[in-house]
Length: 107
Image (cartoon, rainbow, N blue to C red; front, side, top):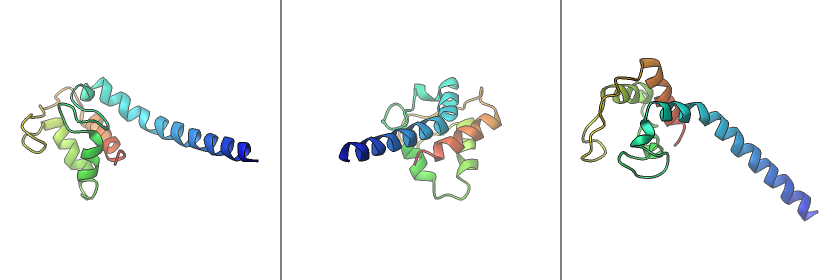
C-alpha cells in the first residue's frame, strides 16, 4: 500500500511541476530570446538580480506590470546595485509587458 501511495504522490508532484514548467516556458523562452538571461537568472544572483527577487520586491505594487515594463524598455540604474540595466530597444512594448507579467509569476 505504501508503494501505491508513494507512486501517486510522485506522479502528482511530477504533473504539478511539468504544468508549472509549461506555464513558464513561453516567458522563459522570450527572456532567453531577448537576452535577459545574459545578465539575469531566475533564482541566482548574476550580473543583475534574480528574477525571483524582482518579482518578490514588486509583487505588492498595484502598477507592477506597468512599472517593470517601463524598466525593461528604458533600463534602470542604482536600484539593485552599481551595475545599470541598459534600455532594451529591441524589445517591443507587448514583449516587455509579457516579460514583466511572467517575472511577477516567479515570486
